[in-house]
Length: 154
Image (cartoon, one colour):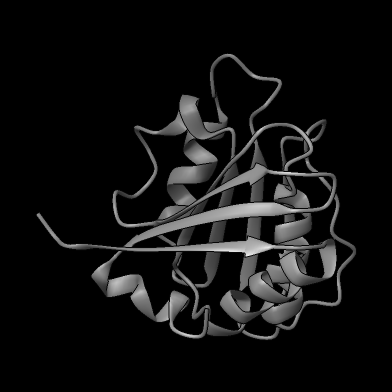
């Protein structure tokens, strides 16, 4: 089993959360998978906003809770953002994720991933975000060694 790299950070406000995510987004190469874990309102979509900005996207970033997925363009790859909060089973979305997993020009970001664990790559960056106060967030990052470059500047 490969060694896992873990980091923990506290963000004091939304701007700091976005900047943390931007630093990861800047390092993305395409082909990575990011799993975001957190309660409603914990800042997952805010994190994706920073991630996309860091990767060079100028797209408007919003939660895909009702649309299930959204695609954001960056200069070098696409970001496929999935949110399975409202679903009890993935259904046809399984195939969409499987295709994205094998596309090295797509970064996959998944919220509420329980129903798609079986199709997500085992080697992914997992970020657990918890709200500690109105604007404060505590973030735990865990990734295999081969994706540790994503956490280098944190």
